[in-house]
Image 1 (cartoon, rainbow, N blue to C red):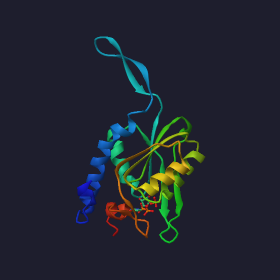
Image 2: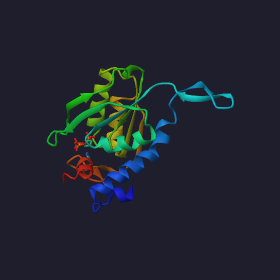
Image 3: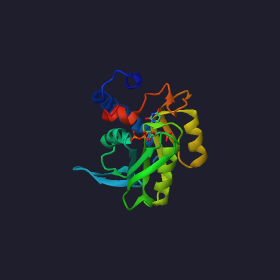
Image 4: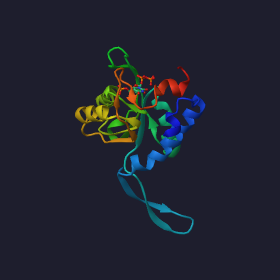
Length: 193
Ligand code: PRP
Ligand code: URA
């Protein structure tokens, strides 16, 4: 996280760090997922094992969530992906939807919503609302950097959605950026500074 926050880091390294941290987060974010018993036939015997009880869907919030999704996908390669295109209007700080494409069986799925930044919480709350409207019932949210304001507004808007974050920072500045944060995650991921 210290390397990721460093303003001098090139987008090539930034993307790689996001993936590495995402992979490290997967065990914590998925530890409470329900599993079911399954029978496995090895070359020598029949034994039992466990499989996830529900299909998994990763739901990155575009654009910056794509980096996190790549890391989560490495550890969870069978997950489907729901793309949620949201952009925060920098005047009003309201999240506006420009794209939504999710698999059809959302009602059965465990959905992991991904966005590196939980700032005001508006984008996360709007993405979760869209996913619920499309049928999702079991959701969790993972970020790299959150702040108390965003965590609180998420708790109010979606108390049923557990929040996982690699870092909980101090506060928001007057433009809605997380302090100390890491700046604009989308710009730093895609080199659009
Ligand atoms: C950033 C970030 C989150 C959102 C967080 O996205 O990736 O989605 O802001 O802010 P909030 O909690 O106050 O809603 P942005 O809208 O800048 O789009 P981008 O990912 O395309 O850069
Ligand atoms: N979006 C970002 O990318 N960074 C912030 O600090 C806040 C919102």
